[in-house]
Length: 420
Figure 1 (cartoon, rainbow, N blue to C red):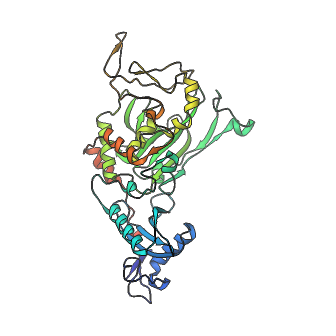
Figure 2: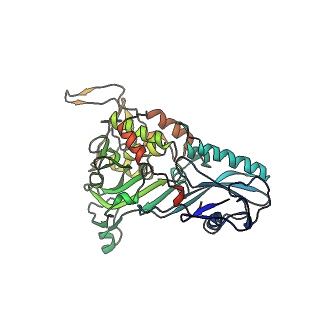
Figure 3: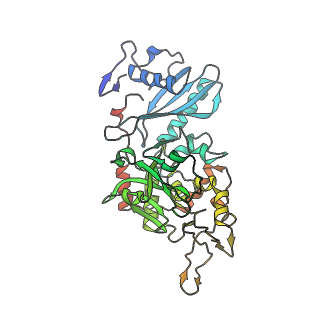
């Protein structure tokens, strides 16, 4: 069977059928059973992903990536791996990635491992509206885990795009987290579009100048959707979901930008596009910003991962409670107490069971009730539960914005692939 490498068709001189795409005839595998097209893939899996005793490999295409495959490894106990390859594209400054996700179970028989591999392949190729690709293959989808163990390599790739340096720290040593004076220098790439793919999560480092607290503002990269507007974010300043340009999103940043890219979508990318379009059109959570429970990170994570959770809040809950002087955003009389801000210039949202006027001048928007930090969630969360919850909070809208986002979503062409 012929394969493609660098735009040229290749065929192994010995074999008649490449068992990377037709591997059910025999369990007797040797290197001669694979064309040179797939030998490169096997070499990388062994060298960079430490997958040994490879028994079978099959490549296949999905709606989100044309360069997927499964691998069965082992001698006496067999493991199934889902492999996703993203080649470097000529119009992007993004390195190639090869991710291998090991399925949680091992199998005593090769035939059983093969059955599971075929099942996972079918789930990933399912193009139904409510399909959740990552939920099908993530080994910890149905157990309580930390956010960091769910959103990490090989499921989500993280890389820094810009750089930032603390000038004071470099000159005088470490600076206190709450130091009132912070000086930064850094760089931002001139063409940020070349460093992101649509539906990547973008984090940009900001500084609260009055308190000195450093945090990341979070948005979703969409590509050009509206005359230069490329980012969808839940804006604290506007207190609602907005589209903005790179310039607007990076305002007041200290140059450090971090990209989070799901290797396998957590849910159907077209559905994510329509949920974002719905949030923009309906002004989702308008006037309901709440640092602890409804901030920019909560929104971006809900849309892309299906997780209504803010890692920054979890990591800093003790410090934030001390600065604000309120026990974890306690709800008092149906409304979130703001307390003394201690110089923290962050907008605190109000939660109410109804709409009320305060002093005849301030109207409180009807918002979701909130509890403790991160909506009363602890240090661990269950991915399957989170995705169900967030999808219940988000609706879908098929309009000009969702059409544009879907048009921008890039699927790596098969002909660019030299590995999978």
